[in-house]
Length: 330
Image (cartoon, rainbow, N blue to C red):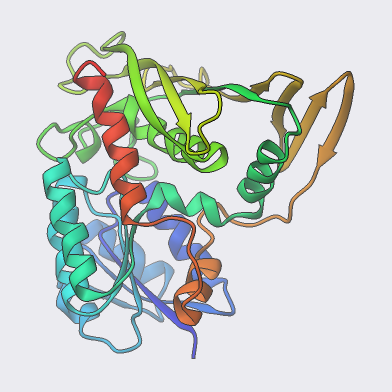
């Protein structure tokens, strides 16, 4: 029997649509159903995946024995209640990022997961299952660029679109301060923070930066954030600087996305799926196996066989806490 996945909410559609496509094209993972309170979203799911259950009632999917994992792509404000409901029903959960509007609300979910004996994680951590990120971690920890000094990340994009085909910046949960705790900076930086914590093996211990509205001054949430963070490796080695600039300030066609890792002996940069290492005057290319960013088959295998999963509820909390620290001054 295939590992069954059901979605609660399609609001974070950038992720939800990817999860649906991965599940329906997998030999080991199956999309069982989709729940949404929005008629437009349910219609889309019914038409695109006529073989699945589509409902506005979460309990319809939570009561099914063939559902093993719940993927929550509802607004952040709704995610904690849905997560606790799913955990109480005996399901593993991977949730929208961030997974709560406050650390206290996230702590309640983490406690519920511990009590239920089920996995809980946030979507940004799924990158740790991909061969690409595992290869990057291997390169850094093997000393391919010497002692790591810094990680530079730029995620310069436009305002989110509520749904495919709808205008960027149209009213949506992403830009509603009652449904999302933060804006552009956390939206992108939470992935970068999780990546840095994993590949360098450490924790963010200090941060400073700017959270502003550079273009969309009418928004209650920021459209621009730039930060310098210090990550202290668990090994006790030299700290690593993280320089992250993440925005919703780009005009159509004006986005920019960059990643660079700097060490004492060289640098690592991405080219497509490859990692290119330039060190000691020589360049080498490393090509990991291709996989989707949300490697659900790997997660399903680990949950089925009770093997180690390289991220956890504690990582969801640490990533969110590191993001929130910038808003409070470090």
